[in-house]
Length: 362
Image (cartoon, rainbow, N blue to C red; front, side, top):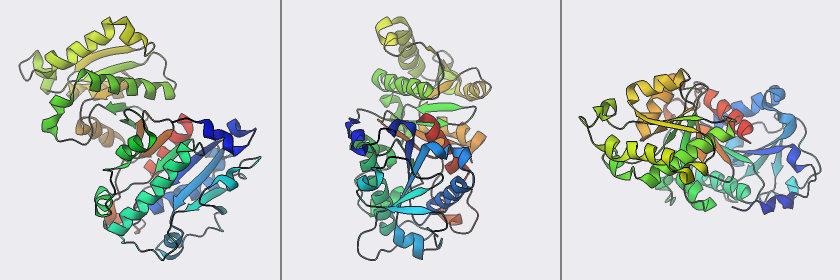
């Protein structure tokens, strides 16, 4: 994506602040109430979020916010309605006043419906619309980052959305060659080489190209976090990293040659800058070592390998980061939680951390 559209803002002070978009997610789940909690905290404690240097824009449904279970009070939160194309409202000489927030109504002109506490076609239509509009803004240089509340993949499927989730949609709509899923906690960071695929398919997907892309994403992640000469550890696939071939062949045939090739080929390594790449290590001890500070980031080979330690250690604070994009995208590392939605039970901690990390990465 080209960022030349940033010039549309006509603001000589554009670089002095960042614009963070927030999408409401599935209306049947905890997303809208997490967004409300976040916005209330932004208003109460603006210094915590650097709001003097921020614009915050929420993408959602006005009809739901006013008539749904939240009874959203736009006036109390000092939220300004922005025109759907966003341009006229953003061509401003100064940022929004401290703590002020913009809202983009993504509803159609007709009355809209939703289903609480379960997946539905209507919920899928809404959450897709919110996210689609936010991506359009980001692609046109109006957002520096998008923070996404959880969507439900079944709702998207029922709504005939042609994407399996946030990540695949981001890749398609931004036109990048590849994206990776990274996960952030204060003491453990990891990037997944493969994502939502059956485990039986993982070994065949672990090609040199796949691993190299994941390594590039690890290094992008570390660069955004300001880590110099990061220590990257590759996880083993098999128990005990195969114990020299006793419990599998992938380490000897794929992972060890990958690490050796990267470290021995100056052209390959030089394109990434300074870093240390080691492994593969037995996964049952690797994540503890990374948590204790031996490594800056772990290159995980499959979904549950990376996500189990992250969620075990920091379930309410972990943040999902999409790497490889021309803008920042973060989200809470949990789902729609239909079973507790609109009961006052949902924790906004991960949503808060996702927002704070988006600001930091910007």
